[in-house]
Amino acid sequence: MRAKLLNRARLLRCAIVSSLALPLAGCDWVVLNPAGDVARQQADLVVIATVLMLLIVIPVMAAVVIFAWRYRATNTEAKYDPEWNHSTQLELMIWAAPLLIIIALGAVTWVGTHLLDPYRTIGRIDAKTPVAATAAPLDVEVVSMDWKWLFIYPEQNIATVNELVVPANRPLRFRLTSSTVMNTFYVPALAGMIYTMPGMETKLHAVFNQEGTFKGLSAHYSGAGFSKMHFVTRAVSDQGFAQWVAGVKADKAATVLDRPGYIALDRPSIGEPVHHYASVTPDLFNAVVDLCVQPGKICSSQMAMLDAKGGVPKEAAMLNVAALTYDKNGRVTETPVLPGSVVAQTDRFVKAYCSDNRPMSAAPSDLAAPRSLDRLRGAGINQASGPHVSLAAPLMAPAS
Image (cartoon, rainbow, N blue to C red; front, side, top):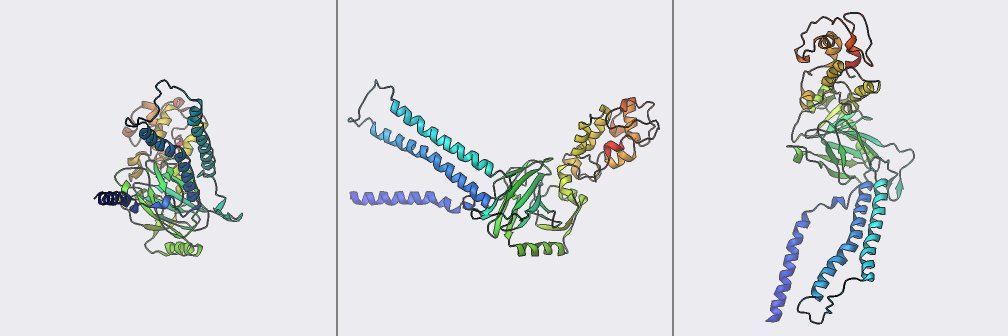
């Protein structure tokens, strides 16, 4: 009878362990078994750090069980010493082992963090293959939107939405930014996560070591469409990549991604299908980073240049800030609130605003110049005596 009970207990334990392991069957182990060398080194770093920490965790957990069993109330043979309070040997063991592991963990992490810096160019394709001195990386410009991904290939002069196709065994150089909120670009099989931020550019260097189809996603919550903000990533041969580029250029449904097209694409959408652009307006990505895709917006670099030269007077600064504004409504509206091109042509707007301090939105379309231009003195503003000399044009020149 007892033997049957023991067998049933063993069977029950096996069933419990098996049922607990079932959820792991659905796990995707791509992080620990990636297809890119950078991700491979990051996976090794995770494993090494975990093993080093387990060198402390496992003995501590085992000691808890051993001490609880050895000094249980029913064990009368255990030595009872209520006056004991210190052991030099025990103190050395308790503190020396964790200290050595922390030193080793810190050294491994410090070295790995610097070697795997996303801004650092890669020096090898895999553990046995260094990057050839003549090998040129493929440039890909990435823009995170609400809620989709835009990929621009400047060398090939094409762009895609929610599809990233790159050649395997070739260094990749990503330039990343965001058109809305901060987000995170993440292809687990390729490399670790890298943030995208509006008005800023981040970089990522990586490589695929094998061909295949992988998943890319946003790893940073960004609103209602976050759960569908993913994209297909395909690593193909050099020949396959050339054929894909030719196919995009020959696609009759593919259009030109110019600035108006980008502004239209930038409107929030959920579950955006994959589509292509057969050509791209030059320097579009730089305009996205500089916050001046929309005609009339002052670029951040232009504003920084004005500040470096000493700034502008308060009256002109208020106008510049209005034209620099790059919020959601200002970005997607068809008619900018204060388009620089219009302001540049109608310099009387600035003069009238500075003369009577009326709100900019209430300024009439035809205003005479103020009696004095003294209040307009400032760095970057040329003084002139004519009533219709453009003072706004140097500050509000439309972005190219």
